[in-house]
Image 1 (cartoon, rainbow, N blue to C red):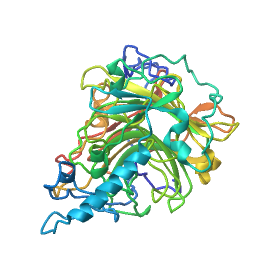
Image 2 (image 1 turned 90 degrees about the horizontal axis):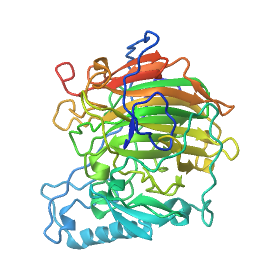
Image 3 (image 1 turned 90 degrees about the vertical axis):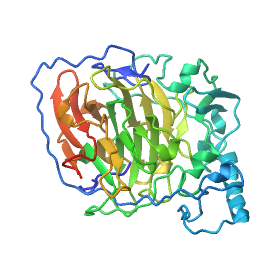
Length: 463
């Protein structure tokens, strides 16, 4: 979830419908909206360079000591050790394994109930006041806040019981007073570049004029004003990810600060990340940082920060069903907004289901407002084969193919100073590698402002 930077700040799941309340996607027939006005398409492909960083991660040589030691042991430096001509040090490896297990004891909180998900995940039902957020010094001893006032113009309906996540197919649920947390395993940590960097994006140099980066985008954005939230419905697919150390995501970014060390972001959407989750399922995720991905923030609930208030959504769990080419389409509604009373940033999923909030004290610039809102897709291109990656963005098809084939965002809105939802003004489009992944925007009376985006990655025009 790197950011484009050519500016100063630069379902079960929801079947498509022309309302996008949040809390849970409503289950309805997906229908391509009948345009009452001619869509105003534009395919403005800007050339911009994303934040530069390189994934440095290689699998460790297999060990004969134990099954778990057959995985690369993360180093404290943030890099996997080279596999060639290395000397195996059992004592050192066991020390590192002890650190992994100590970290697991810290991050995996005591559960009052455990649920085995059909996809292999283990979901722990943890008492709300024991969740990772309350390890933070400013939250210790406190309890989650009551729900805030929704933005004006929000068409939220009563939340329904379905959450469109695979773990719910078990028929089990977490009791009131608890929250569902995807259990972190040894294998999860052993896939990471280091224990310290697990659940975090690798530190990178923030450089707006960079011409070489392994992050590629197809996004729309607004800037130049003060923003207090954003809302959209995001089409869900399961794109192919070609390399373990690559990912493909579709998300909303709430951004403030400069693209130096003070960058603040709040991020939410779905992603396919084999390194983080060990599979190729699209998963609901969150992220935050206050220092341009250096030392603060994390994915999901993997550090103290985001406070979850809901017992029906597991952040990091797989979404189901997903869209299919020329078949049924599904999307999830997401809204992030700043509570005018307390200043915290709240997250809503589907049609009225509050997931939780990021406390305002976590942030510097976002303690006030955002300067930029961004919607769209991002992939990592490691060029591990010497060519451009074949990792897909969105559906893996270009924007011009349209509904049922290309992935979309619809009903894009922002929240203003008066806590009101408004349509986007002065929208900008960016596809920084348009031969690999592109974007096309439109507008009508049913989907409001929308766009199609994505692509296959490597092809004849994207070698």
